[in-house]
Length: 129
Image 1 (tube, one colour):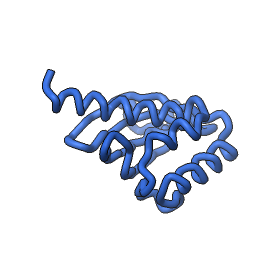
Image 2 (image 1 turned 120 degrees about the horizontal axis):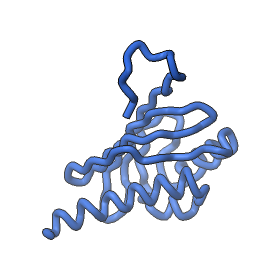
Image 3 (image 1 turned 120 degrees about the vertical axis):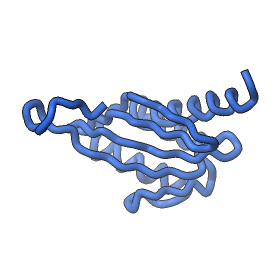
């Protein structure tokens, strides 16, 4: 393997460990340890910084105590990791998260999500994944 391959794999591990800790294990401290102090969040409902993440995820768990996350696809492009995942928050969502890694931690994050329609509600036979 090359150094670039190792970096790609390490970045995937950082992101998937972060998402698993944040959403499946409710391990806020463990997830927060994987973000930089300045953690830039592009979701308008989550404040920047490690403390902003902690406040946001704590509120999220209060609102959705049974939340879960399941990775469907992961892509890496340089210092960016892109995940396509299913979140259960009482209803199911297909979500794309984009992370930028800096010095072995998550430094920046974007996310977009779309509710998965109930069976029979889709106008085609394609899945969200």
